[in-house]
Image 1: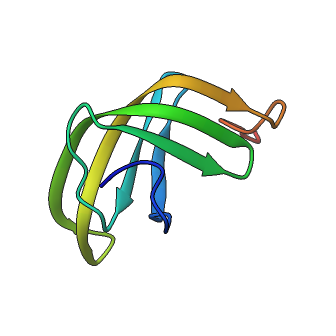
Image 2: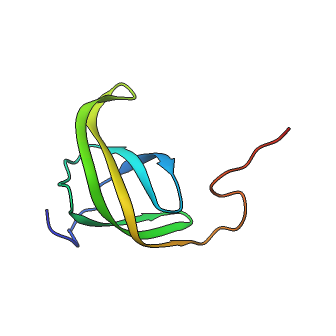
Length: 85
């Protein structure tokens, strides 16, 4: 798959940090592949570190880990973590 592609791939983020993220998706990605990630409040260029196939959240797909090469978080405090006590 080349980038940019005509149709975007969709995924569900499950682990996010300032340095990278893990997400689930239906598209197999290749380690060291460079991808663009867009979401509300997040814009990043990332390098794929791993892509593991399996059943996740009841669906067959891929668990993908990426490291950010560039990242921009447009939301302020509380976007990555918030808690109430």
